[in-house]
Amino acid sequence: MEPGSQDRISVRGMLFLARHGVNLDERLEPQPFEIDVDLHKNLSGASASDELADTIDYSALFSLVGTIVEGQSFRLIESLAAAIADAVLAETDATAVDVRVRKPRAPLPGPFETVEVAIHRDRAE
View 1 (cartoon, rainbow, N blue to C red):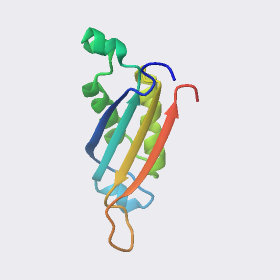
View 2 (view 1 turned 90 degrees about the vertical axis):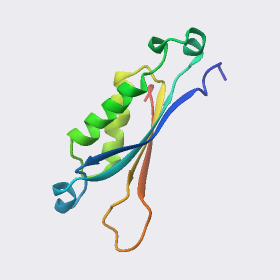
View 3 (view 1 turned 30 degrees about the vertical axis):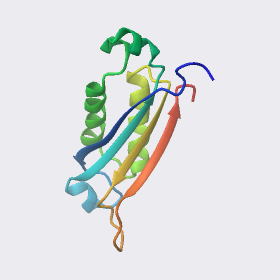
């Protein structure tokens, strides 16, 4: 295993109000969506230089994710998660990304905590 291959930046619990869902009423009223993003990148350069330019700016990441979650509408949270993963790989130099999308107000017929989809994408895919 090469040095830095297990390095990761995580931004967890990003909360956005958006309109995603199969049912029309899910897309009419904004509802909360929680997003986690884990970026895989060798961080040895950033740890040595202590410079933002040598890592991934998580403020910019937050804005990127928010633009997708709040600016688009998907029927499936699987599609939302994939769109986030694709954008992160396109806009950063991460080698891989894990995205989790949670929908705590999914229309289920009984009590539950949340529905979650997790997607992993490698730059090589």
